[in-house]
Length: 162
Image 1 (tube, rainbow, N blue to C red):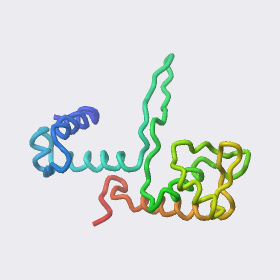
Image 2: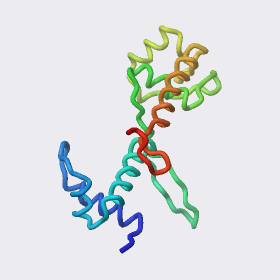
Image 3: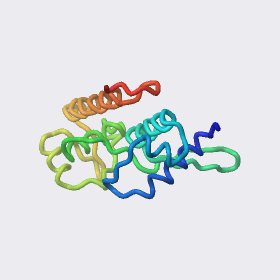
Image 4: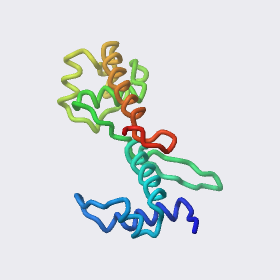
């Protein structure tokens, strides 16, 4: 019996919602509980994991016959410090000049002060932008992020980390 991708994801979701943090399941167990083949379960779990780690939370909105995608929450990339997260945030938003400065209200004051003190960012009114040194530092961090994505476990549906 062939199922639609939506049915498969719904079945996986139903089973995993029963669990609690730290619960462990084998792929065989999940396959049996959802009445799916082991390989189907394995492939869909790879897809779900990839989406969770590499795609920002979004919402599909249908208005007047036209669908739009709205980013609801930016993806949180692992960084070694709040300062790096700040620099990466500004870099991703293209905050490279006074004219393109971005609001960073959601971040704590300490990384802002630290980055300003190190001349990695400048303040323009209530917004911030990267200095030349800040751009270099942020680009390095962005490069590491891209390497992590490229080393992601899934390429063309195949687990490449083994």
